[in-house]
Image (tube, rainbow, N blue to C red; front, side):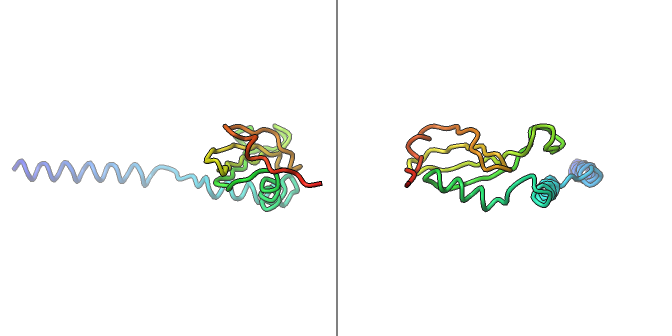
Length: 126
């Protein structure tokens, strides 16, 4: 009888867990982020990601490993902060990770964080 009770308890517990997960509202953050970025691009609030990547590659040596489009407020309203910011993580040839913040509408480099940023800067030809 102990084995049957054990199995029954496990079955009930599994059903409760499944009910909680299946009844909870699902939020597709990836879809909403993608939609927000698409709308910002179409409305001219941000430049295409390709231009941001070109700009970073013209300024720094290294490999881009992550890019995020951020707004300072939770609603994604660009007017609340004056625009969007691309946050780019860059792996330098020296093995350091830099975090670059760029204005998503002007390509202006706003901030660079991380060890060894100076060594990763490309020399600008004139």
